[in-house]
Length: 250
Image 1 (cartoon, one colour):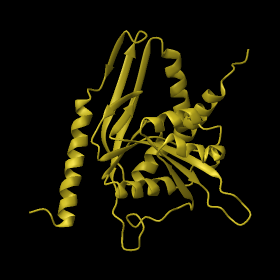
Image 2 (tube, one colour):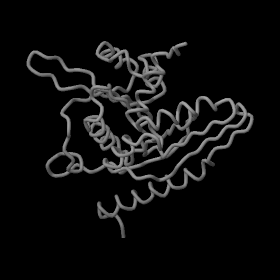
Image 3 (cartoon, one colour):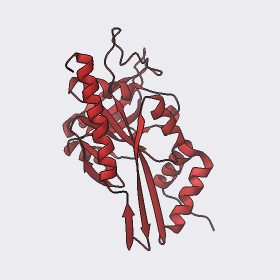
Image 4 (cartoon, rainbow, N blue to C red):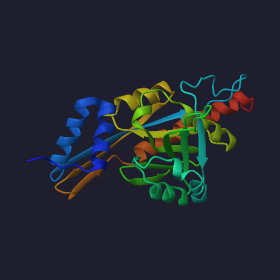
């Protein structure tokens, strides 16, 4: 007797496979089977400093591996101008993106550059929130000088290409708006995402764990204070470094 999986479930398993291989998929399947009795989730919390623009005009001297263009959305109305170009297969639907925008999120859309006779093509997107970090479906307030990459997704045919167009566009957005740090969360099972983030200059500042027993009758998670304190230390360190670079430190 065959097992019917929804399109969203298949997409999710494909995403897990690309990030951690067969082992990661098996781990998720076992977790799903044990879910009525035991559930466990973990996320690394990563941060990096927004680089200064160097003399050549590129962000921190980093060159873009894959050329492209980025459209930045800051309101539900701006989504209407590009919604026909966005693939219907993405995890977050247009309605979901609209809800994020209504709550003040920023959505970065990546496209291939247009060529002679060829229109630009949608590559992927990233949902970012100002002063808010989302972990295990719960949102926490953090420093307003930090932008958190809540969710990033590239279409399957563009994954693994080191496409940096969104990262560079987000860095430029941060510089224009006085934001100093970028934060994100990654599952320990997602090895490819971890490698890509570490290559981009992120550092691990904490790890959140969530455990549920007997259908959430007993729930435990890492105390928020254990994560909030490292984030504050990183921000203070960046403030001192910024003052030193500008000559404001005494």
